[in-house]
Length: 114
Length: 112
Image (cartoon, rainbow over all chains, first blue to last red; front, top):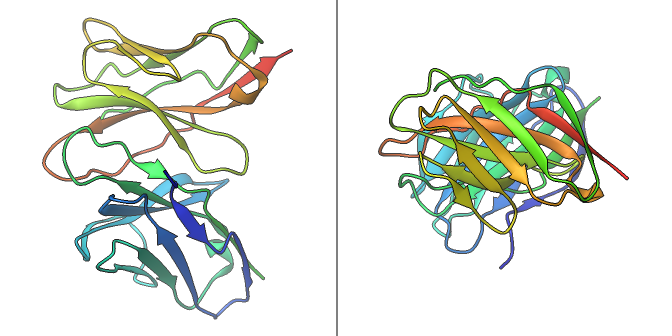
């Protein structure tokens, strides 16, 4: 069974640009969460989508947004990129929103802002 | 979510059992204990989770004390590929999918 797939694996952008990252969850998984990992802040929750609706949101500015499609695939977008947005962006999927459902992570997209 | 305390680093000889402790003294009744690990340049990998009973799967065993204030992750026969940062996470389980809150974890080094 294929795992969580994130594309692209690496991305270089400049300040002020915008970027879209993609995540394909494990087949049959309907919940998708996004996390940001930086050396200073560690792993931090961005948002969660289920049934094409945002269900949870972390403490990030509105420049960070996402969406989920009917096939459960998800994208996240960051607008007006800042140097501090350089990070590893991780997507995790789980079967549904029930109790005791572990989240399974992809290997992330490493975003570098110049 | 309850906070967890883990040692920052541990060493283990290859082939021996690795016992990684986690303290979660403020855990409440509806909180599960989850373990993940992250190998360099990869995403976190789910290992195991439990509520109050001990759990075992093909990767590891999870031992939770009777008062649920601490737990131990056991890798029965550590290999070099088990070198990673291990995260113990306490996660409230209510209706819905609560986010995982990662701390700094324990850096396990398996030594040949």
